[in-house]
Length: 327
Image 1: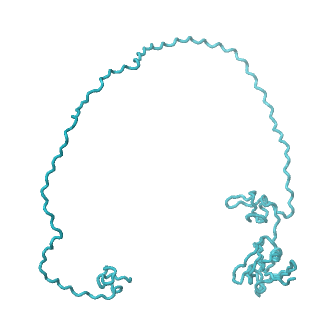
Image 2 (image 1 turned 90 degrees about the horizontal axis):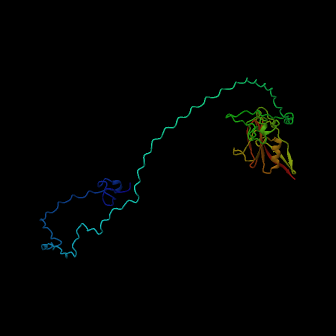
Image 3 (image 1 turned 90 degrees about the vertical axis):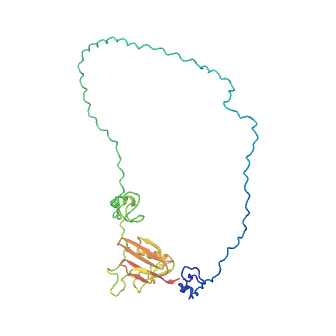
């Protein structure tokens, strides 16, 4: 450990025997055998450092102390009475005279006998029972005005309160929150038009689906998606190209393989509205349009950098915006 412990020169302690810590102390040489002590005559005891004190003379016993005689003779009890004894004090009030004995109470006098009750008069014949009352007629209810009927729904309008209960028994009908998945709804638990008490009448929404063939790609590996026509706004014309060698059926993907940055996302919009929003936004360089379950659509406007390839998805398209001219 770098520390010498054999007790030799330069060691820190003598924990180890001499020469047994060679790795830290180095080689040691055994000391020569010790010589026997030389013989010498016995030494006389050394003289005392201090001379012995002289002997003290015998102590004289102390004299008993002599006190002066007392000035006054001690007083011996009992003390003489200083005042003559006083006679006992008379009582403040005379004693109460004894209470005279009361005579025993006399018994009450006997009460006279009560006279017999008078004889009952002859009973009159019982009166005949009253005639029965005629049956009472129920009160006539006041005339009520029927509630106004709701206006008739236009053909094709959905309005019913048939949304089922949740798993925990909660009734979503008439709770002030819309759950049919339409515009302004908080969720899509109920089917479209089945939460009319909270959402109002609905029209069946049919999103514009992308015209894709059953397989997403043909045998040659190219998508069979029609390229949109050029768009013109504020004197500028934009064309739409596929991000990956003419293939546009799928989700937009960057060159690094990640997803692009989304500028704005809009649900329940058509593809024409999605394309028009990308043309109106200067920060938009491409758009992605996706249809879910053939009921809901989502439009995503993408900012730079522009996507260069796609991830194959059946109901999605991706197009890059390119300015063709500038006036």
